[in-house]
Length: 477
Ligand SMILES: [Zn+2]
Image 1 (cartoon, rainbow, N blue to C red):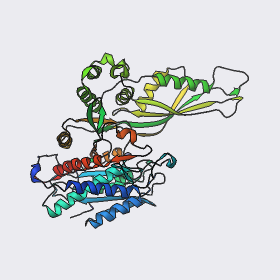
Image 2: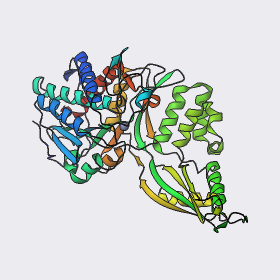
Image 3: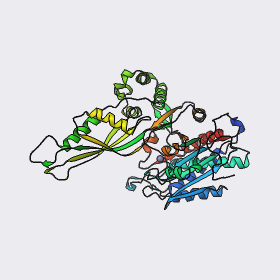
Image 4: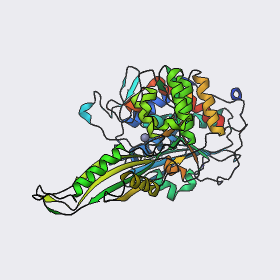
């Protein structure tokens, strides 16, 4: 039943007929939730802090669990101790595969700031504590449990799939030195090629006002990391002159910090803001709608319209290319005017923007009189996927069914995820790892934080939603 090699290229015309949900098998939901918690606690206890990673610990664990369920995964060590695991359930070839993918590395911890052992997998007051509980071992655990529940239904309850279901748990997302899914996409594309892929970032409930929203990642900003270098005349600091690189750079940084690059609203941002406006309603909703529809309002600072600085910052970021100076380097001795000074710029670009276009816009902002040049050190393209798709509609339907008051929304991630790599396979990637949080708990605030934790109820709710989406999307009619 398990076949490590894809047998069909992704060339199928998307065809979706909704199978009758009642006819399809469901697992015991309590056992599914118990499995997720068990896998998560086991995974947290394996220290895969990146750097150095050591994700082979997680890959070997996952391979053992899959083997115990009669599934033969492929384990790939991309570099010593950097482990990746991929498994596949075979469909009848009626449609192209669905990929569930996650990363098993985590960001390092400041141990002294935690009240529990970050690698203890402790359960306290209904929460699983530990590094990676949210980002993203909780999701690895949920995907694994769903994958095994589908395998179980195929074996014992007559479930047949029209598309393969692929599970991938890979290394090196947090430092992204290309030992994870990026490298697998280059070297083993047939193991991963899929029509659709689900992973982080989205499907988590987010409370704004008194409404619950479910942002689902359908786009991701690009990143351009570069240096802005100012040149000037070197000399003895005892005799001031105007052509000083340190001063040129300071002026340029100040001007960039005040600059507003043009507003551009992509389909994801438009749907996100429109959905927020409708969901929030009232004066704030009307103001957001007006901002969206009336171009003349784009110059009005968003916090004046929505009265909420963090929401305004988020909305600004998803509708603009942004430039943030993060490192300054200049000079080496008090009495020497250096000939150059440089600022590192973290730029995030909207889908459709290019590094060259961004630099041109920055030059226009700075004018001609400041002698600076730009050097791009690295860049990653932005991605955006259609959300008028059968899978997106199914996700919306499942969320509404399990939370009738909730509002699913397309969402643009401002940071980078592994979706950039998976997109190169031609897959439509959504950030969908459903979890329902209580008011006051926020995924976005707890992720990478001290005492990272996830509510068992959030995992239980999410595993059921994810199972139903995967089953209904993959099941043969
Ligand atoms: Zn992550």
